[in-house]
Amino acid sequence: MHLKQYPKAIATQQTQLLELRRAIRQTRGTIAGKEIDIDKAVVFDDTLKNEAQRKVKRSELIGNDVDLLHLLERLDELDDQKEAAEIDLNRLMNQLAIAKLEKRQTIAQMETEARLAS
Image 1 (tube, rainbow, N blue to C red):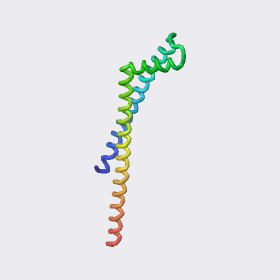
Image 2: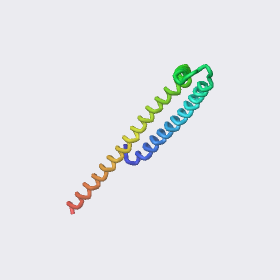
Image 3: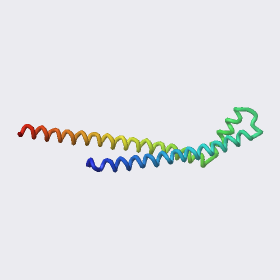
């Protein structure tokens, strides 16, 4: 990749990372809403006599909520994608730094050769 191509590639990667972060926030918000609904159902269930029964009921409700389970799986996938995007962004940034150093080295060598030739 040429030096001129790095800014666009980095910006593209940053945009992808931003979109993943937005999707993660949205998914977490949806999960939180579903958990609040479950907690309300547990709190207002008069048949539950103690905290142990409430914990068991909450676990049952979470385990039976297919949408919530899918959201939790989706959140894991998004987290993995975000990690991969961050790795790719760091790789691009490191490649840019190396390309700039190589360019500087080439310029320094040319300057040295020009001084020796004169």
